[in-house]
Image (cartoon, rainbow, N blue to C red):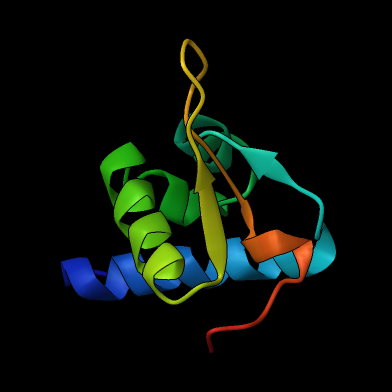
Length: 85
């Protein structure tokens, strides 16, 4: 994949698939990169994962949780996951 938008959309799809299988999952962008994103796409790096998470957050698929002194985490929206695609 060469187009940045295509990569971000593919990573978003991986994250959605992961949430379908693990609806109670929550992790940081680094953890999502390591565990939720398939190996070929994981090579695109954390910035692409963050862009995918922002896209999914804007669509209401994931929610961001920010706590002082703890890494920002992302999880399925209200654990009542809804698919974007």
